[in-house]
Image (cartoon, rainbow over the protein chains, first blue to last red):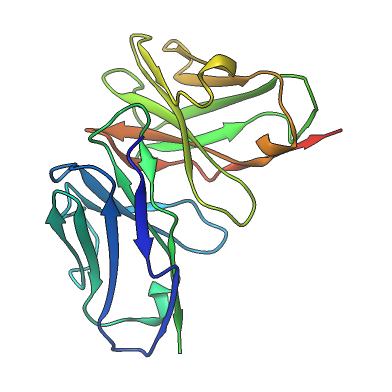
Length: 108
Length: 116
């Protein structure tokens, strides 16, 4: 399995802050990484695909970068509606597809 | 706009089989891969497996011996069976559409509790 390690597991930031989450893969996964947002009580929502491509309709304050084993996800200016848990997901190894453990983002 | 809706029993007895169905509306099930993902209460996401509309499947090796996923294109549905369940299978179960190995549309999820 490709293990996906997200950090931090949780963070607290102020509205307007720049927030960065990292995801490290146990093997080289090229750019085969997606990012999801899960708000409390809701299903996850795709935000970023192929490491850096913004899904249609997703605000431009969200971005992703990286390749190989090290990836990052950034919210350029944190908004109250961004309170959620964020997950990375790799698809380089299909058996199995795996998610990171999640990063919970809260407002300070 | 495509929508997915999970349905099935919310309570399953230990050692029995969990059965869920995902109904796709607003679009055809044909031409896509479809998947099941679960989330134990308060925990992270675990991929269970996916199926192509033609019936080709791929499963998480950790669950493969107990999982069946099938598709019914005439009903625009796909289904999950998970046998010999235990308390560890208690989770929120999601169905989702797969596009180039990203999950771009999700159902709202259905909670399945395994009771002893």
